[in-house]
Image 1 (cartoon, one colour):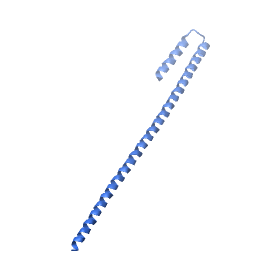
Image 2: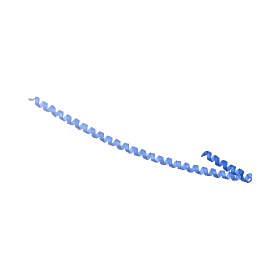
Image 3: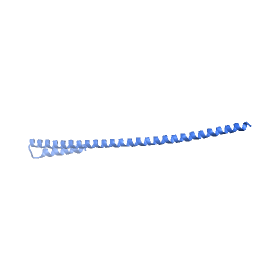
Image 4: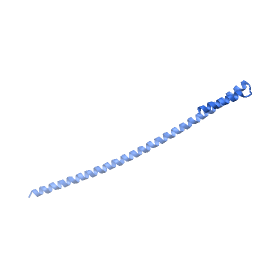
Length: 116
């Protein structure tokens, strides 16, 4: 791209320098053309910069949305894991209580049988 612009500028300059005009007219026309090209370049640069900023802001929004969704999923899985942990803990405690009750009943039965 850079070489293309250099070639374009050189072609325009050669065209103006070889045109049948006075030196002053040629310099003025060349200056006007170069100023016009500079203005077009600056306008294109401004537009590209604006587009880049738009893309960056869109990417920022998308990134934030993804981060929020990931946090929501994490919270959901954490909640589900806590519920599962509580379920398992309650089942374990129930089994321990059942075993303790069975053991106490067995001890009571043994004591009654030994009292003969």
